Length: 93
Image (tube, rainbow, N blue to C red; front, side, top):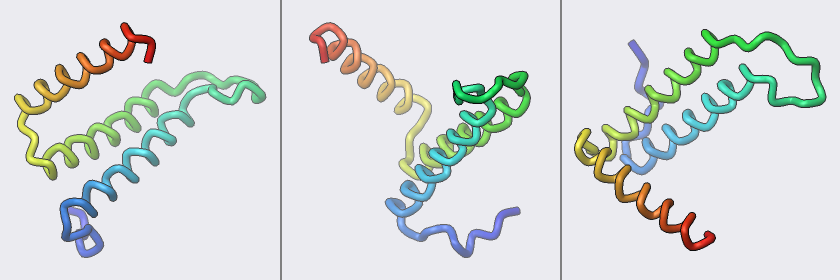
């Protein structure tokens, strides 16, 4: 069980903390890849990548809960944002 003494009390601060966690986990996921073109490649650690991705999912789910998003809300927001992105692609954004 986590010690939540340092977890922020305010929703905005919790979302900000979760964003920081997501960013750092994404960097850890990136480190499982051979993105450094100047280094000799090593075999891809797919299991390690999965572990880091699950860490990201954990924090994304927690942020969704902090924002009171239901599964239906998430689907609707995805559709709404996807339409914006498609429009941007069509108009040369």
